[in-house]
Length: 170
Image 1 (cartoon, rainbow, N blue to C red):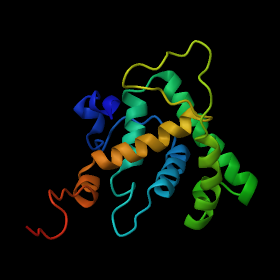
Image 2 (cartoon, one colour):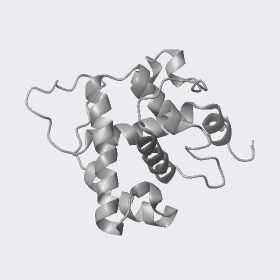
Image 3 (tube, rainbow, N blue to C red):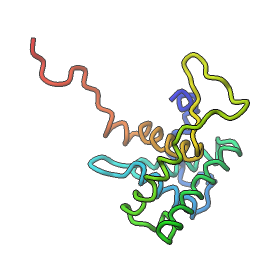
């Protein structure tokens, strides 16, 4: 959340109609399928309604470093390769149930904690870096959730504040 708070307001704003794109159309379609599987529409809107894929693409095009771009696109390629190996077709072409069946084991393996690499910065008082098997997938999942809850749709539909929940009884 600290990293998202440090972003300029334009980075979290709705993407412009003619915004610069980083991902190729097939990669964007894959990202749409992945974010929809991570945060599908249920009784509340999902990642697609909050335009999360377009916002991630905008961050990649206008803000992310070359290393971040390659890490994220490599993670998308690994998800697509897993789908092709398991189901015989690309992740974006799978049904919602098939996508969930492919992404669940991938999620567990990708988010498995690993020891820090040599030369990694040490944890400081209130911040401890997270090291996982697939940092690109970690970033996709983190951005999906952050951008959803920072969107107007996510905030209005999911983040309700009850000062005192339930009935007050003196």
